[in-house]
Image (cartoon, rainbow, N blue to C red):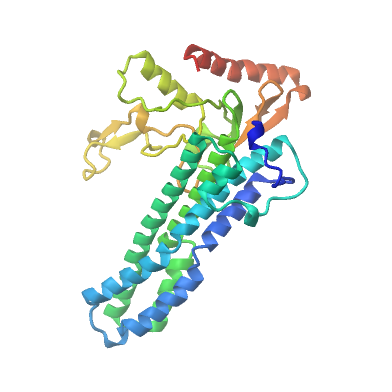
Length: 365
């Protein structure tokens, strides 16, 4: 751990990754204030739209709905920076706490709220600061997309209510279902924003604290998806210092550079690594409108497939944990100490770690 990142103001003790991450997700989600929005939008509809007349919604009505929803959630954009920054810092502090246990738990209200504050207080490198800025930007983009989905849903519910003269009681019930029913698409969209952006910031902060040449092990929840089970859960990877550009689709298929980057994407972890633009599906459509007929499907190319990265996908709750492969090993989904079983450690080390070290040496990483 770098001495410049030791921040005595914050103490970390008794930390559970998932407990802290769930708390962060809850604070993020609660910050959207759906109870308040539900009350405000129903009041707005009753006072402004005169649905009891049974007349179709006019263009001005739709504009008013659009403006009302957009104004409400645009105010939340500032909160995205607050929670993403705190998630990033939380990841750094938890990694630090694993190495230097302390006494008091983290208090979210003590953590920085701005990128500049975090960069100054934690002596972030230029790359770490850029990773944090991108995480904030990514979160803002997802919030904007969720806002647009909310506008469409609210307009559709109000339109249906007006067309069928359901009345305000039915309108309140239908809007309540959209915002608070766990099975509604809108509710899932907003939860996806909170979970995905919290986890992304948390894991980026955690990886930022780990130096090149160290190792991490992935852990997933029992209901993890097949890609997470295959690429994250119980899998061990070296953490590397990446080059400025880790893309590789432009390299010739048989070139050394292409082989190098494909191997690194499959077998290494680094700050800012993500699966943006990639998919867990093995095949892709030639014509998006022609369905999944065999003749309309092609195998995905390497740069289009999921690679080990957290979050793997929206709703991903996987996490990285530092591992020292000279003193520890992984068996049965658990990290164990070498002293517990020297033979088991040796077999694991020879089959898992040595091939990875050979690959790193081959590509001079």
